Length: 306
Image 1 (cartoon, rainbow, N blue to C red):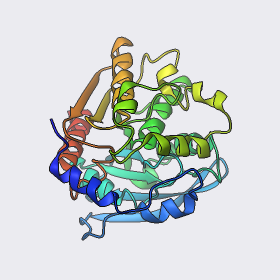
Image 2: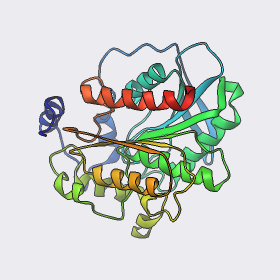
Image 3: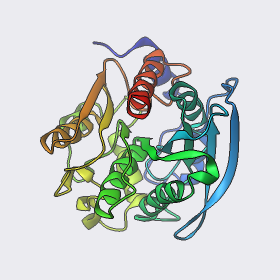
Image 4: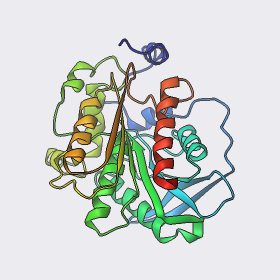
Protein backbone atom coordinates (compact mmCIF):
# COMPACT_ATOMS: atom_id res chain seq x y z
CA UNK A 1 0.00 0.00 0.00
CA UNK A 2 1.14 3.63 -0.36
CA UNK A 3 2.75 5.53 2.49
CA UNK A 4 0.13 6.29 5.13
CA UNK A 5 -1.12 9.92 4.80
CA UNK A 6 -0.14 10.77 8.38
CA UNK A 7 3.35 9.37 7.82
CA UNK A 8 3.57 11.21 4.49
CA UNK A 9 2.81 14.47 6.29
CA UNK A 10 5.86 13.87 8.49
CA UNK A 11 8.00 13.15 5.41
CA UNK A 12 6.76 16.32 3.72
CA UNK A 13 7.71 18.38 6.77
CA UNK A 14 11.17 16.80 6.89
CA UNK A 15 11.89 18.01 3.34
CA UNK A 16 12.16 21.54 4.73
CA UNK A 17 14.53 20.61 7.56
CA UNK A 18 18.35 20.30 7.42
CA UNK A 19 19.50 16.80 6.54
CA UNK A 20 22.29 14.84 8.22
CA UNK A 21 25.50 15.14 6.23
CA UNK A 22 28.93 13.58 6.72
CA UNK A 23 30.12 16.61 8.70
CA UNK A 24 26.95 17.22 10.72
CA UNK A 25 27.71 17.48 14.44
CA UNK A 26 25.80 15.11 16.77
CA UNK A 27 25.00 18.02 19.09
CA UNK A 28 23.07 19.71 16.27
CA UNK A 29 21.02 16.60 15.47
CA UNK A 30 20.23 16.04 19.15
CA UNK A 31 18.58 19.45 19.33
CA UNK A 32 16.04 18.47 16.65
CA UNK A 33 15.23 14.98 18.00
CA UNK A 34 12.82 15.87 20.78
CA UNK A 35 9.35 15.04 22.00
CA UNK A 36 6.45 16.64 20.19
CA UNK A 37 5.15 19.90 21.73
CA UNK A 38 1.84 18.35 22.81
CA UNK A 39 0.15 18.12 26.23
CA UNK A 40 1.64 15.32 28.30
CA UNK A 41 -0.42 12.20 28.98
CA UNK A 42 -0.93 12.03 32.76
CA UNK A 43 0.76 9.18 34.65
CA UNK A 44 0.18 8.37 38.33
CA UNK A 45 3.81 9.09 39.31
CA UNK A 46 7.04 9.93 37.48
CA UNK A 47 10.45 10.04 39.16
CA UNK A 48 13.77 11.12 37.67
CA UNK A 49 16.80 9.64 39.39
CA UNK A 50 20.18 8.06 38.68
CA UNK A 51 21.40 4.51 39.12
CA UNK A 52 25.01 3.32 39.28
CA UNK A 53 26.55 2.26 35.97
CA UNK A 54 29.85 0.83 34.81
CA UNK A 55 31.29 4.30 34.12
CA UNK A 56 29.28 6.53 36.41
CA UNK A 57 25.66 7.28 37.17
CA UNK A 58 22.99 6.52 34.55
CA UNK A 59 19.92 8.81 34.49
CA UNK A 60 16.60 6.96 34.43
CA UNK A 61 12.96 8.01 34.49
CA UNK A 62 10.51 5.73 36.31
CA UNK A 63 6.86 5.86 35.26
CA UNK A 64 4.47 4.29 37.78
CA UNK A 65 0.86 3.91 36.53
CA UNK A 66 -0.82 3.12 39.87
CA UNK A 67 -0.24 2.75 43.59
CA UNK A 68 -0.62 -1.03 43.44
CA UNK A 69 2.48 -2.97 44.44
CA UNK A 70 4.45 -4.80 43.38
CA UNK A 71 4.02 -3.95 39.70
CA UNK A 72 5.65 -5.66 36.74
CA UNK A 73 8.29 -3.55 35.03
CA UNK A 74 9.47 -2.66 31.55
CA UNK A 75 13.06 -1.47 31.07
CA UNK A 76 12.97 0.80 28.00
CA UNK A 77 15.90 1.79 25.76
CA UNK A 78 15.28 4.77 23.49
CA UNK A 79 16.20 4.89 19.81
CA UNK A 80 18.43 7.37 18.03
CA UNK A 81 21.26 5.43 16.42
CA UNK A 82 23.20 5.26 19.72
CA UNK A 83 24.05 8.93 19.05
CA UNK A 84 20.89 10.95 19.73
CA UNK A 85 17.78 10.56 21.88
CA UNK A 86 17.18 10.83 25.62
CA UNK A 87 14.52 10.49 28.29
CA UNK A 88 12.49 13.35 26.82
CA UNK A 89 12.52 12.18 23.19
CA UNK A 90 10.64 9.01 24.16
CA UNK A 91 8.57 10.41 27.02
CA UNK A 92 5.26 10.15 25.14
CA UNK A 93 5.78 6.48 24.31
CA UNK A 94 6.87 5.56 27.82
CA UNK A 95 3.85 7.30 29.35
CA UNK A 96 1.57 5.42 26.99
CA UNK A 97 3.18 2.05 27.69
CA UNK A 98 3.02 2.56 31.44
CA UNK A 99 -0.68 3.41 31.35
CA UNK A 100 -1.67 0.76 28.85
CA UNK A 101 0.30 -2.13 30.35
CA UNK A 102 -0.24 -1.31 34.01
CA UNK A 103 3.48 -1.81 34.62
CA UNK A 104 6.23 0.51 35.76
CA UNK A 105 8.41 1.71 32.89
CA UNK A 106 12.06 2.47 33.59
CA UNK A 107 13.45 4.55 30.72
CA UNK A 108 17.25 4.41 30.50
CA UNK A 109 19.41 7.36 29.39
CA UNK A 110 22.45 5.27 28.39
CA UNK A 111 25.70 6.90 27.26
CA UNK A 112 25.75 8.18 23.69
CA UNK A 113 28.37 8.12 20.96
CA UNK A 114 30.69 9.56 19.79
CA UNK A 115 31.55 10.75 23.28
CA UNK A 116 31.10 7.15 24.44
CA UNK A 117 31.63 4.63 21.68
CA UNK A 118 30.65 0.95 21.53
CA UNK A 119 30.17 -0.92 23.83
CA UNK A 120 29.27 1.87 26.27
CA UNK A 121 25.56 1.83 25.38
CA UNK A 122 25.42 -1.97 25.70
CA UNK A 123 27.20 -1.90 29.05
CA UNK A 124 24.82 0.72 30.44
CA UNK A 125 21.76 -1.09 29.07
CA UNK A 126 22.70 -4.37 30.73
CA UNK A 127 23.69 -2.63 33.96
CA UNK A 128 20.26 -0.98 34.08
CA UNK A 129 18.48 -4.33 33.79
CA UNK A 130 20.68 -5.81 36.50
CA UNK A 131 20.03 -2.83 38.80
CA UNK A 132 16.27 -2.98 38.32
CA UNK A 133 16.29 -6.69 39.16
CA UNK A 134 18.54 -6.25 42.21
CA UNK A 135 16.55 -3.28 43.57
CA UNK A 136 13.04 -4.50 42.78
CA UNK A 137 11.78 -3.96 46.31
CA UNK A 138 13.18 -0.42 46.40
CA UNK A 139 11.10 0.63 43.39
CA UNK A 140 8.07 -1.55 44.25
CA UNK A 141 8.26 -3.94 41.30
CA UNK A 142 8.10 -7.71 40.91
CA UNK A 143 11.57 -9.00 39.98
CA UNK A 144 10.00 -12.06 38.32
CA UNK A 145 8.08 -9.85 35.88
CA UNK A 146 10.66 -7.59 34.22
CA UNK A 147 10.65 -7.17 30.43
CA UNK A 148 12.88 -5.14 28.10
CA UNK A 149 11.92 -3.01 25.11
CA UNK A 150 13.34 -0.46 22.74
CA UNK A 151 13.02 1.09 19.31
CA UNK A 152 15.61 1.15 16.53
CA UNK A 153 19.01 1.35 18.29
CA UNK A 154 17.07 0.77 21.51
CA UNK A 155 15.54 -2.34 19.97
CA UNK A 156 19.06 -3.47 19.24
CA UNK A 157 19.97 -2.95 22.89
CA UNK A 158 16.91 -4.82 24.13
CA UNK A 159 17.77 -7.79 21.88
CA UNK A 160 21.43 -7.75 22.91
CA UNK A 161 20.65 -7.42 26.62
CA UNK A 162 18.39 -10.47 26.36
CA UNK A 163 21.29 -12.50 24.96
CA UNK A 164 23.74 -11.17 27.54
CA UNK A 165 21.32 -11.94 30.38
CA UNK A 166 20.87 -15.52 29.17
CA UNK A 167 24.63 -16.02 28.85
CA UNK A 168 25.24 -14.53 32.30
CA UNK A 169 22.67 -16.78 33.91
CA UNK A 170 20.22 -13.93 34.49
CA UNK A 171 18.35 -11.83 35.13
CA UNK A 172 16.58 -13.13 32.02
CA UNK A 173 13.77 -10.78 30.96
CA UNK A 174 10.20 -12.09 30.91
CA UNK A 175 9.81 -10.73 27.37
CA UNK A 176 11.48 -8.54 24.75
CA UNK A 177 9.66 -5.94 22.66
CA UNK A 178 11.75 -4.95 19.65
CA UNK A 179 10.40 -1.98 17.71
CA UNK A 180 11.97 -1.80 14.23
CA UNK A 181 15.24 -3.07 15.76
CA UNK A 182 18.66 -2.63 14.18
CA UNK A 183 19.94 -6.20 14.04
CA UNK A 184 22.34 -6.43 11.11
CA UNK A 185 24.77 -3.56 10.67
CA UNK A 186 27.04 -5.98 8.81
CA UNK A 187 24.60 -6.65 5.95
CA UNK A 188 22.62 -4.62 3.40
CA UNK A 189 19.13 -6.09 3.17
CA UNK A 190 16.81 -5.22 0.25
CA UNK A 191 14.71 -2.85 2.36
CA UNK A 192 17.81 -0.73 2.98
CA UNK A 193 18.19 -0.32 -0.77
CA UNK A 194 14.48 0.18 -1.47
CA UNK A 195 13.77 2.69 1.28
CA UNK A 196 17.20 4.13 2.02
CA UNK A 197 16.27 7.54 0.65
CA UNK A 198 13.14 9.61 1.20
CA UNK A 199 11.59 7.65 4.07
CA UNK A 200 12.99 9.47 7.15
CA UNK A 201 15.84 7.06 7.98
CA UNK A 202 18.33 7.16 5.11
CA UNK A 203 21.25 4.99 4.11
CA UNK A 204 23.63 7.92 4.51
CA UNK A 205 22.34 8.70 8.02
CA UNK A 206 22.73 5.04 9.00
CA UNK A 207 26.38 5.23 7.93
CA UNK A 208 26.68 8.47 9.95
CA UNK A 209 25.27 6.81 13.08
CA UNK A 210 27.48 3.72 12.71
CA UNK A 211 30.54 5.87 12.08
CA UNK A 212 30.02 7.69 15.36
CA UNK A 213 29.11 4.57 17.36
CA UNK A 214 31.72 2.06 16.25
CA UNK A 215 35.46 2.08 16.79
CA UNK A 216 36.26 0.14 13.61
CA UNK A 217 34.61 -1.95 10.89
CA UNK A 218 35.45 -5.23 12.62
CA UNK A 219 32.75 -4.45 15.20
CA UNK A 220 30.04 -4.73 12.52
CA UNK A 221 30.07 -8.50 13.05
CA UNK A 222 30.07 -8.37 16.85
CA UNK A 223 26.70 -9.78 18.01
CA UNK A 224 26.37 -6.82 20.36
CA UNK A 225 26.17 -4.62 17.25
CA UNK A 226 24.49 -7.12 14.92
CA UNK A 227 22.54 -9.65 17.04
CA UNK A 228 21.48 -11.44 13.86
CA UNK A 229 24.99 -12.98 13.73
CA UNK A 230 24.78 -14.43 17.26
CA UNK A 231 25.69 -18.11 17.24
CA UNK A 232 22.91 -19.16 19.58
CA UNK A 233 19.46 -17.59 19.94
CA UNK A 234 17.91 -20.41 21.94
CA UNK A 235 16.30 -19.95 25.35
CA UNK A 236 15.65 -16.24 24.88
CA UNK A 237 12.54 -14.41 26.13
CA UNK A 238 9.35 -14.39 24.06
CA UNK A 239 9.55 -11.59 21.52
CA UNK A 240 7.14 -9.07 20.03
CA UNK A 241 8.71 -7.44 16.97
CA UNK A 242 7.34 -4.42 15.11
CA UNK A 243 8.42 -3.46 11.58
CA UNK A 244 7.21 -0.82 9.12
CA UNK A 245 6.58 -1.38 5.42
CA UNK A 246 8.74 1.57 4.30
CA UNK A 247 11.44 1.28 6.96
CA UNK A 248 15.00 0.50 5.78
CA UNK A 249 15.36 -1.70 8.91
CA UNK A 250 12.28 -3.76 8.01
CA UNK A 251 14.02 -6.79 6.54
CA UNK A 252 16.63 -7.20 9.26
CA UNK A 253 13.96 -6.97 11.96
CA UNK A 254 11.95 -9.67 10.23
CA UNK A 255 15.10 -11.76 9.65
CA UNK A 256 15.79 -11.62 13.37
CA UNK A 257 12.23 -12.75 14.07
CA UNK A 258 12.76 -15.70 11.71
CA UNK A 259 15.99 -16.70 13.44
CA UNK A 260 14.34 -16.52 16.86
CA UNK A 261 11.54 -18.77 15.62
CA UNK A 262 14.07 -21.25 14.23
CA UNK A 263 15.70 -21.30 17.67
CA UNK A 264 12.39 -22.18 19.31
CA UNK A 265 11.66 -18.75 20.81
CA UNK A 266 7.98 -17.70 20.80
CA UNK A 267 7.76 -14.74 18.41
CA UNK A 268 5.06 -12.42 17.15
CA UNK A 269 6.26 -10.23 14.27
CA UNK A 270 3.87 -7.57 12.96
CA UNK A 271 4.55 -5.49 9.87
CA UNK A 272 2.54 -2.26 9.77
CA UNK A 273 1.65 -1.31 6.21
CA UNK A 274 2.30 2.22 5.02
CA UNK A 275 4.60 2.97 7.95
CA UNK A 276 8.02 4.62 8.05
CA UNK A 277 10.82 4.42 10.58
CA UNK A 278 10.09 6.05 13.97
CA UNK A 279 6.32 5.77 13.53
CA UNK A 280 5.74 4.28 16.99
CA UNK A 281 7.57 7.11 18.76
CA UNK A 282 5.29 9.47 16.82
CA UNK A 283 2.15 7.80 18.20
CA UNK A 284 0.63 11.18 19.05
CA UNK A 285 0.42 12.14 15.36
CA UNK A 286 0.43 8.78 13.53
CA UNK A 287 -2.57 6.63 14.44
CA UNK A 288 -0.90 3.40 13.33
CA UNK A 289 1.95 4.23 15.67
CA UNK A 290 -0.53 4.34 18.52
CA UNK A 291 -2.09 1.07 17.32
CA UNK A 292 1.33 -0.61 17.20
CA UNK A 293 2.16 0.66 20.68
CA UNK A 294 -1.18 -0.70 21.90
CA UNK A 295 -0.38 -4.08 20.32
CA UNK A 296 2.93 -4.11 22.19
CA UNK A 297 1.15 -3.18 25.42
CA UNK A 298 -1.40 -5.97 24.90
CA UNK A 299 1.45 -8.45 24.37
CA UNK A 300 3.10 -7.32 27.60
CA UNK A 301 -0.18 -7.58 29.52
CA UNK A 302 -0.47 -11.18 28.37
CA UNK A 303 3.07 -11.87 29.58
CA UNK A 304 2.65 -10.07 32.90
CA UNK A 305 -0.92 -10.90 33.86
CA UNK A 306 -1.94 -14.12 32.08
